Image (cartoon, rainbow, N blue to C red; front, top):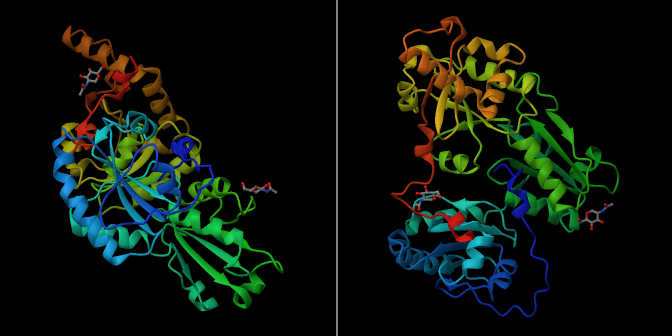
Length: 409
Ligand SMILES: *[C@@H]1O[C@H](CO)[C@@H](O)[C@H](O)[C@H]1NC(C)=O
Ligand SMILES: *[C@@H]1O[C@H](CO)[C@@H](O)[C@H](O)[C@H]1NC(C)=O
């Protein structure tokens, strides 16, 4: 999850919970504007299905969600752990607005009362829901019991390590909540007491980040958190900045979520037998475009995504290839080697936003039609193709897509 941008809607519900009498029950709870807040703040995990009676995907989901709720209740009967709820969007329009619902059914994931933009996008089967909940309820932080264990910890894309005096501390609660929210983006470790006393100032708790050592030029692949240890928001931003890499891999599991972030994709199509291109791309982005936040930088296995490649007239033999997909058009970046030239890829991205890519494309097309081309072919007029990645947005074969903007008229 990339919290930047979507973070405003991430709000702690600030009100006092009165008597919590709401038992989990073994069926899906009907959620309305009256009981929503109580349900969210009194449960560790809530899956909320936003549906309508007339949406056929919602109709198919309903009995499956019921059965899942019953199985989940058997496994986790304690109050306050997990609830499955449903909101009828025709009756609760304000809630549908508040949660930005653009398709039915949308299943939102809410942890510890925190509303984020995370959704359940997995299979809609009883087994898949049960497995998902089991995984989500595991402790997001792994405790290490020896220094050797810590030394040998697999760093992967990056880990956050906590050196804490004890578990019984408000700062540890904050760490746990943040880890719970960011559990899919980072690995979280912790060590307590005597074991870590040489790694932190006496009586103090410390959080450090260790990054992937294989990325060259990574500015701070080891850094210590210097912010407020009890500020959920500040710590979430720090973890997000450290753990969500500038360049991410796209696959069919995360494509829907990435496309819903709404930013154009700058994609490297690579050949998985030549991974050097990925390293080169990451290094170039890190070096020249570390502050670019108008796009998502992604790497795509050319074999997995050969359809969009062919669509641009490219084949596996042409890899590596860089392209922008704006969800309307795809534009091919003329020469991969130029990613190392300061400013060249940046200009290509600027040209997308200024409309120059699109404009030059039409200009080139016109010139071609009049067959009196005044454009120097050496200048590589941008070639636009219909977007292929828009097909990875939420599919009408899985959701009823709606136009919420229409309601605002
Ligand atoms: C740290 O954050 C918490 C929670 O947001 C706040 O109550 C506290 O005043 C902050 N402390 C400092 C020193 O800013
Ligand atoms: C949504 O609105 C746009 C523009 O207002 C319109 O072109 C499109 O057909 C609408 N889609 C649906 C599913 O109603």
